[in-house]
Length: 238
Image 1: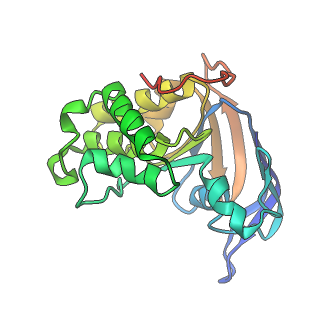
Image 2: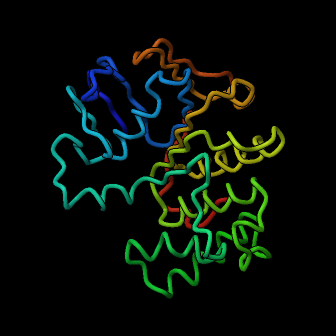
């Protein structure tokens, strides 16, 4: 469960990014957060990632109270989250395999687990033949797939995707969204920050609209079914 309780965020320059918002996202939900530039969407992700602190209110994520979390517990908390950027942020001097493996090494995973998990992800995402390719040799859609694989390599409970289709053509955008939907289908919580109305309309999930730091609507699209996380479905991302 992710819960924002009367959360207000005011930056040092006086800008109020969030105005006492209340929000609950259940385990296993797929949620779109939409709104114009400057509405407060990015601030929500920064608060969830513990890159910023609330001015007032509380944020609860699973067993963590982000108001009270100790500094040395933040890295462990962040391992429960996967994050996908609009601009991919792949390491240019590493191959596809190495980019994914790097995300596992930084949290201390063993070499044996990396050698099992990375090939499994590459196969599930149809990119085994690209394992030795470098980012500059990939298409935009392929780069985003690698970014998603890197984000889920440590099996996070929640995946946050910030404008994941912003640099892609419409066809590839739908394919990336289908990948995120498959991840959600095995019980992981997926939060997508986007401004692409066509995608939101097509996938018919829960849609939270932010305007000037306030939640102005919270609607469930037709066909939405809340899912519960299974005990364990390791590697089943396809």
